[in-house]
Image (cartoon, rainbow, N blue to C red; front, side):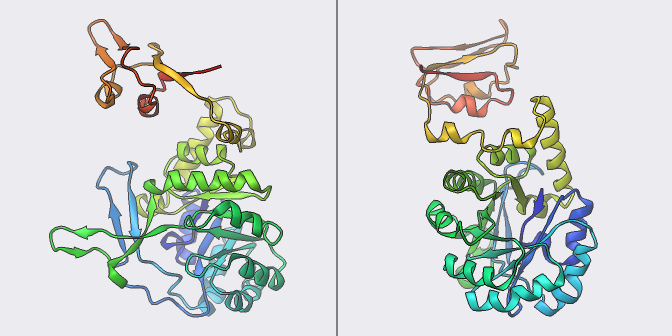
Length: 351
C-alpha cells in the first residue's frame, strides 16, 4: 500500500503522516525544474455521501509548488527517515528529467516514477531517465492513451508501470453561484476517485496482459475490496490518493487491514496467490444464462435487488422469508449479482 503523487504526498511531513497511518511505501509529489504555479481553488469533492462511500474529486493540481532544492535538502530526507521505500516522481520532458533524476538518486530515493500526464513522449522520457540513473524507474500512464501499446513500447526501458493518472478535463459547477468550483483555465480539473476505478482496472489488466513488468494500480481505491480487484487484474502493488485526501492518512492502514482480513477469510496464504487471477477470465469471458439464482443461506432479504431489477423479475417475500426470481422475466443482465451485498446471487455459466 503506497501513497500516490499528489496532495497526500505534498511534502516530507505529509509523507511521514502517511507512514503513521499505515502506508507501506511512499511516493512523493511530482517535482520538476521549477515550482508549479497552482491555481486557486484547485480541489472540489464529488458526491456528498458519508466517509467511505462512493466519492471522488476534481483537481486542478499541477506538480509540486515546493522548489526542487527544498525537496532535496529537506522533504526527501524527512520522508526517508520513516525507513520506508521512497519513490520520487519527476516530470516532464526528456531534458528536464535528465537534469533532475541524478539529483534525486543522490538524495537517496529508492526509485523514480515519471509522469507523461501533460507532455506525452513516453519512450523518449524513459530513455532519458534510464541513461541518467541506475535505480528502478516506473512509467505512470494516462488513461487517454492505448496503455497496452505504450506499455509494450516502454517494456525494455523501465522496471515497471503505474496505471493510471487522472482523467479529464472535467468540470463541476456550483449551482448557488453559477461558477466553476475550480480556478485556472476554464475552471477545469482532472477526475479521480471511485468513478475512475473501472477505467483504471481496465488499464491495469490490459498492461498486465502484454508485459511481464510489475504493474502498480492506482485510481479509485478506497477499500480492501477495491485493492483486491486491482491485484486480480494483475497489479502487484497499489497506490492511494483521493481516499487519503477525503478520509485522512489512516485510510492506508484501514485498506491494508481489510486486504489481510479478506485473504485470511478466503484462505489465501499470500497476496501473490491472487495477482492476475482474473486475467484468464478477462481474455475469454464466459457467457451466462438466465435466470439468476439465489442462495437463501446468504440472502438477507434486503430488497436491493428487487428495487433495482428493471425487468421486474425479482420478488421479496418477507413473510415466507424467500426471494423469488421469475425465470420468464429474468434477462440475465447481471445487475443484481453486482449489487448484492452478501453475494447471495449468481448467474449460471454456460458449458
